[in-house]
Image (cartoon, rainbow, N blue to C red):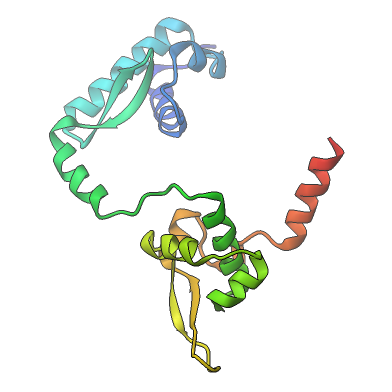
Length: 183
């Protein structure tokens, strides 16, 4: 039995939203064999019209031969303003390594990070501070009173964690590396 348009619309919306690239009708048809092509096309058009009719800030658009949920062009200036306030998500391997050390050993000082990594990490720490992934957590009560660093709320948001207890354990990493060396 074929699916109805009203059944398909929320499924299509979820699939299109989840897809990292525009998703084609052919891909959708493969995922949804219980929907015939005509009903699938009609459901996509109905979903597009729903977005348009409700005056939402989003729209369903055909892009590069597929479908994508996008922001409406008339709101781009506001989005641009917002994005200027957000740090870039790209990190170098050195910054990622440094972030991992801080996440697992916090609170930790720059000299302690450098001792663990075996290389100068000042630049990586500066990058992580700029991206607001780490923040100062006070000073260590030793000679020189070096700054202690720890992860920030932004770190939790960017990595989809509720709190630090959700970080993978070192045992999880060992299982991953064992599995990788076996294959």
